[in-house]
Length: 127
Image (tube, rainbow, N blue to C red; front, side, top):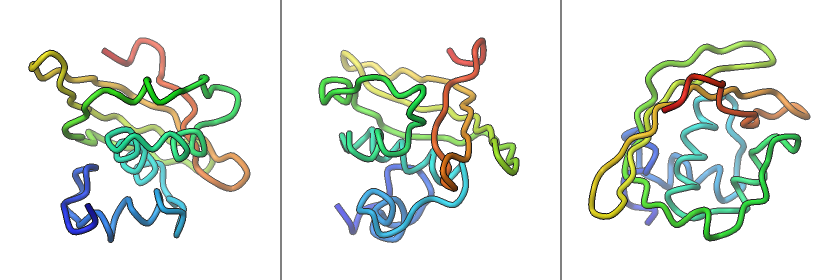
């Protein structure tokens, strides 16, 4: 998988992109990078990484069945970066019953113990 394009849509090879984070070699230093790496984790079924990058106050009890969706591509629409909180608007496509669907969400990320973590989708901003 490391020679292929990264699932996050950055245009980089996986080995030089999200693999750095999913393998534990580095930790994302921006909310957008974290968002992209989390998409890669979802698309690859990396439950451990998703738990590690989710704020403990909002992290659901995920299991492997929650990762059975086939995510196909990600588009980061825009980001608003702050010192302690950041917002990432994105569209994520997935396949279900041989049909393509899209989720459009605005997500809130927060610095927690000096690392960016996913907090929640902003209410009324996802479809």
